[in-house]
Image (cartoon, rainbow, N blue to C red; front, top):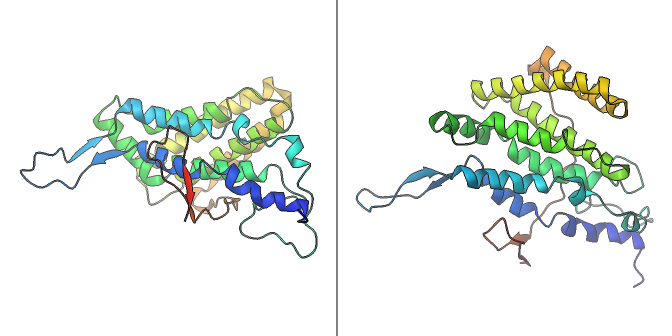
Length: 267
């Protein structure tokens, strides 16, 4: 009581990002290895890949967190976050935004989807996906992961209103993360080759889609433009400044099963 209504913005952050630690846990399953520091003669299995079914279950769980239904803020809540009054500036504990003094309704979705996409398209994880799939074809490969992510974002049926704008935000987050992977000189050449081929295929499919769907012509056109610029000079590619999630510590997750509701505590 007696505090500015704009303070609701700060209370939103931990609730909106309640899943952030579970997402990190789930991402470790994808392209993951089950290993122990075994000793000679102790009878332990030192190393084995995570079963393919578990990896695909982890991917599906991660993609559920970037769906419009999970990220779109309700209108009633948005009307309760007015511009901040003098003396109550935004801090690093708030979502950054691109709309000036008003609360950016799409910024939380961008921050949350950037978090997940950067985990999915991490260069080391992508290289493991390529290697493990080559050694065991039943393991999910990098191209399967890319195609699944793009189908869940760019390929999802477009929703009306703010939810549709959230879908656009998550789609561009996926695209920028894939381009970052394709330009990553620290990962393997085959990983970059697969990522760049996927980008070429996306540009071709979006060109055809733009001709069929006038409502998304701008969205597809800008995506194609980004890919064309990347293709012209990958070494000069630099990802756009991302809206990062506010710092998460000292809140931590105690539960170990990433597929169950998390239990949180404050140190």
